[in-house]
Length: 316
Length: 324
Image (cartoon, rainbow over all chains, first blue to last red; front, side, top):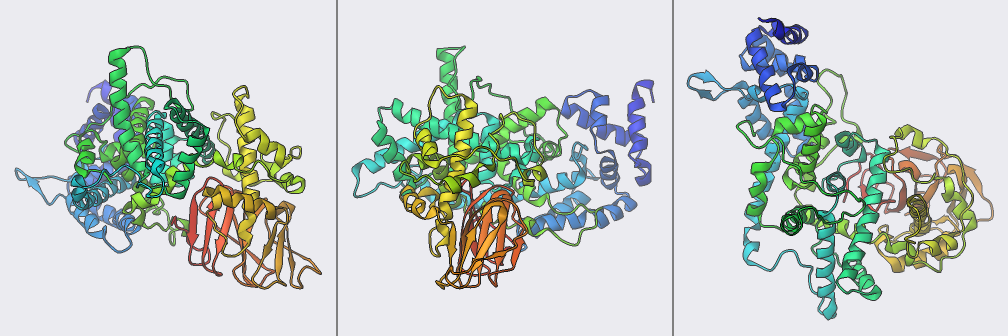
């Protein structure tokens, strides 16, 4: 091995890969694949890896018995506990079992064992990766079921509008205006503000859990959520007024929503708002290449970011 | 309800599980993490996956011996399915809060009570360094008393000329005032989710000054005092007995479904329960946020409203909490 491969050799030793009889070349290949995905320099990439977990994954992918014994002993319980945490009725257990089979590599390709472990690159702990795959599969299953249930609505009533109030002819107009204002306001939020909102309100994550994602303390997440709510309120009012609503109408919009929220759904607003906002922005860019919509709670311009990790062969 | 096929068209752009895991574990470089964050912030599917990961993250690591999940980590995935119903009220909360101060311009001056609400320091700038949660639970320096009606007046409409800090302070103080006002839940059967009912808040204010928790038995009452202290009477108020709660945080509201049972909530996620009127049990709560209201039906079931409008429900005496 050449001198420039020294970091790999060092990582190999540190990972205890020899314990699972993983050849250096296999380990190096796993590291380099991850480095290419991370688009980072090899040395920097290696420094951030969970080396022992990567070595174990390599060992399991190779079918090393000792590695499998260790994995079964230490990680299968994690997988099952995560499955039980997701669905206490046992609904996620079969997903965990299926995943376990794929990890073992029951499927062969050209006579070669194909284990899911080949998609683990050590950028997270093995436990987190397992939970991510399990969560992804569970969510996709739920979404697939939801999709089937929702199909009849396509030909039904417009799903987004609040229910019209029979006794008040303005109620429907107010509800619709409020819905649109809220949608546009949420669409214009900073990604991180939107992330906190979605995680907190739609995903029922705790402040601590959100803070782990955003690298913020619980208190900071709480403060930002409070600020975002105020900003949303202010911006919704501003948008309503810009459509000719006076004080009374604004109050009635809010009061109407307070008495009947109708179909206000944050997940839909986040989702649809993003699409609308993207459309608006592309229109704005065509009209005014340097322009952009103001964002509630921020003076900065929106910079649409490319989506990382586009779906590729290891999309699980 | 959304066209599911539209939703799933986004899958091609979604993050793969390995990237999501790396992001969750802090294994992405700053640029990649920012991109991941930007995507997840507006991708329903990825957000659901991240949410689920977070809820399973508490599964003990294989190499760490742990007898079982902490009670607050015992997660049900039921939330994943009825998203629409659960979230409808969320949009409501986001647009309603600014309405609350303005709906109570006639709030009576509650000098004594307001003094209890002054323990919160002015909101730090949003980019302020993270403060450890433990520090939040420590006693905090007191500020000058705030007269509620002045505060309410100042909040009727935010002054554009106000600087950011003043506005934040006012908002936080308003939240305190709201929390105080919501002691209406001391009356059994009062709606805990009064946060979204401005008309209810007017009624609340009239009762806020007493800060007493009435039980169905007119002879039994509790009253909330400064510094986490509670007084108890079993003779209709002729004699008050100080009962130890073991906490020093500000107590904001209570609910007594029976003569012996009383639930009290306070700042920093304080939830207290007594089943004999005198001895208080400090129950663990999933968040350390300030709690504004509680509605209890018995010694096992209670609905708690946080200062930012989230609802938490227990049906097992505070062992586990769920979001209804």
